[in-house]
Structure formats: structure tokens, C-alpha cells
Image 1 (tube, rainbow, N blue to C red):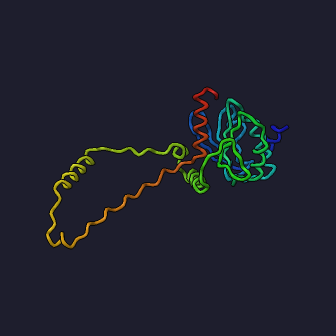
Image 2: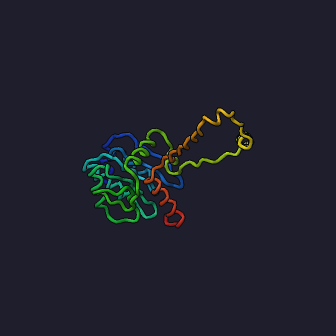
Image 3: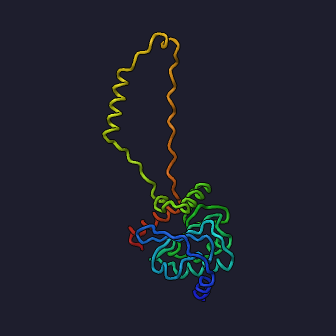
Length: 220
């Protein structure tokens, strides 16, 4: 009965396909802006692990019921569903998630808040989470939000030549005239500005790391 209701609601929704992505190693990503229309089609994720991003998702009670059916139909110990949610997720959806049956195939992650207690709490500021969430919408690849790019120091020939020239100049600094020495004050060195940390999505990052850990342990 639950499966039939789930299929009927999905077919009748008539919404566009959800925001999707591939997180590698057999892990798919689905983002639902509004339910039930953004739930993946029944055949899209069959037998495969996935991340279902329900942060900021809009839904009414009927749509939340469709979500419950989708979860029961897809989640399994060998193909878990990693659900991302937060305090901005629809109250109807949070109610369904709070009443879900305990299952090794469902793992709820997010920033803990009043009325929302995930299985795995991730420490992240609301503004940071929103910025990372919106970044994916603007075209930044999901893997860039999971794996922060590493800036490698390049010791090319031109750079080494500049450093040698700088060292030579510092060993033989020009001598100022007596008038300059008497009147000039030492110039303060400009303060180095630290570069901002790379943008990451800590909640999505934790889901991917957990998936990889389960793979390594041969649990999935």
C-alpha cells in the first residue's frame, strides 16, 4: 500500500527532474527543492547508495508521506540512503524523519538544532551551510565542495631566480644619504592578509566520508 501511494504521488506530481550529481564510488546525489516532485524516479537509484539532500526542502503532509514511502522502498543495509536535513527543512519532512523506523539503511546527517536531532550531528554555521548549498546551484562541482583544492607550491625557475635576486639585494642594501638617515622613520612592513579557507560543504563531506568508510569496511 505504501509503495502504491508513493508511486501514485510521484507520477501525479509532474515536476522537473531533481538536481542530481555523481559523488563517485557508486554514490549518487539527489537534491530535492520541493516534494514529492523532486524525489528520484523509482528505477533511478534501485540497488545503489545515494545522498538525498533535503536541506531547505519544501513539502506538505502528503508530500512527506510520499517521502516516507520512497525511503522505505529504497533504503537497505547494502545500499544506504544518506539523508541531509537541517532546521530549515519543511516541518512536515522533519516530522516524518523523526518518526522513521530505526534502520541501518537510513542515516540522517545535519547540524543539530531545536526540533531536529540527526543520527550524525555536524558542526557547521548556518551561513556557511547556506553558502555551500547555493554554490552547487551556481555551478561549482560537488566534488569541489567535498574535497577542498590543495594549493601546491611551485618552485619553477623564474621564481627561484627572483628569490636569489632578492637575497642578493638584502645582503647589499643601498646606503641612504645622511639627510635621509636623520629624518626618515623605518617603514612598517605591510601585514600579510591570510587567504580565506576554501569553500566546503561539511554536511555533504561527512556523508561522503561515511560512505567511503563503509566501503572500506565492506559493509556496503
